[in-house]
View 1 (cartoon, rainbow, N blue to C red):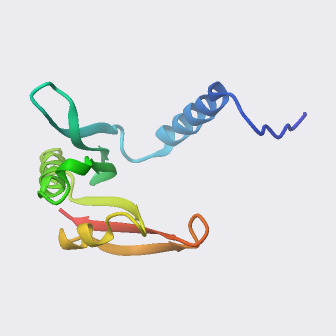
View 2: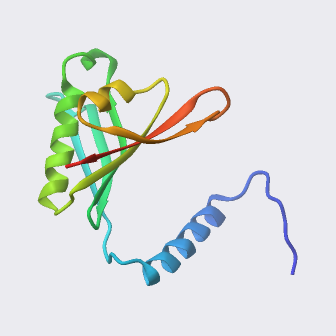
Length: 137
């Protein structure tokens, strides 16, 4: 056997490893489906101005991303997106949400919406931190 350190690995290798780990997990995990979920706000031309995405599995919504364009910030669009994601997740049977946010991102926003910090990764990636937050839906 030979072990190589790859400073710039091919995307194919990364996808292969991801697929193999996913295969392993699905054989042992208590849930049998993980479904993507997203909401978006578009202008009259169909351009995305804001959106959120994540996935649902078991009792959980995992919120991966929530983004609002600069011109729409401060107009409660993020709150509407978050509420729609939570509602859609509840309609799928989810009772909890998990997300993470960096120290310069949206911790106060999520706290305003009922999320609480469960864990803080200090020194991430160097001087900042990452907050892992949950909410009962």
